[in-house]
Structures are given as structure tokens and as C-alpha cells.
Length: 180
Image (tube, rainbow, N blue to C red):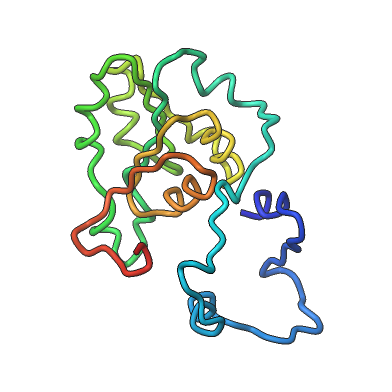
């Protein structure tokens, strides 16, 4: 997220590698609403509130220049996540959508993606963006050109929403209070 946060005016990016001096407070992120007595009416809601540089070198190769609806999707999260079995879904569930005409599907999965590689040649409207995505900024460059994102509960859902993209979130039966 460093390349994304660097684009926000007034933000100084601090990483785990930085040494902090003159720190007044350290606060857990989820404690802040209680400390500040935050209500829904006080939360700024200007969307989008995250952006990326639009000077993409890769998008001409990824996103097709057609009038079709462009849908990005992700179906698996980090397999090491303790609740991954409750949030990731099989790619099989998406296969019925890939037969729809006038819609292009862009896999935003990162990392090894054996399931997608097995079926990608069966669909002319299915594209794999993984080789071009190295960080959230790269994901954001792809998101800029999509009409919709369909994803499981992962960072992608939060990021696409923060960029103002229409996002469908696939949740297990046990959703959380943080999502209102």
C-alpha cells in the first residue's frame, strides 16, 4: 500500500523499517473510534478516498478495449488466514458466469493460481491479471478500468470500495459488526 498512500496529501508513510522519533501516542486502529467517540455521522464519506497514478504501462495489455462490461473477481484469500475456509470459495462457482456474453472477467487473484490456469483457455472473455500485479498500486491500475468487482472478504474488497468501484462482497453466513 506504500505507493498508494504516498499519493495522499498530508500523509507521511512510515514502514516497519523506519525508526520513529518523537512519538506521542501509539494506538490500536480498532480502538480509535472509541477513543474519539466516533459516530456514523462524523465519518467522512467522500468516495473515492484512495487513488492510483493512471500512467499505466500494463493496462493496454490487460484490459480489453471493448464496450463490454468489465468485471474483476477474486475467489481466494490468503490460505494461511485462520478463517480462510469460511471466506474463500471454489473457482467452480464463478464458471457459470464466464459463459455470459458481453462481459469480460478479469481475475485479480495474486500468487499461484492453478485452478484458473486449468480453465482460462476455455473462455475467450476470461483474463488473468496476476502476472502484472505486484502490489496494491498495480491492482488499483487494473481497478480503474473495471466496472464491477466481485470478491470474497479480502483486502481487495476494501481497496476497490475505497477507490469508488462498485463492489459485490461475497460473505459467509457469519458477517461482522465492522461491516455495519
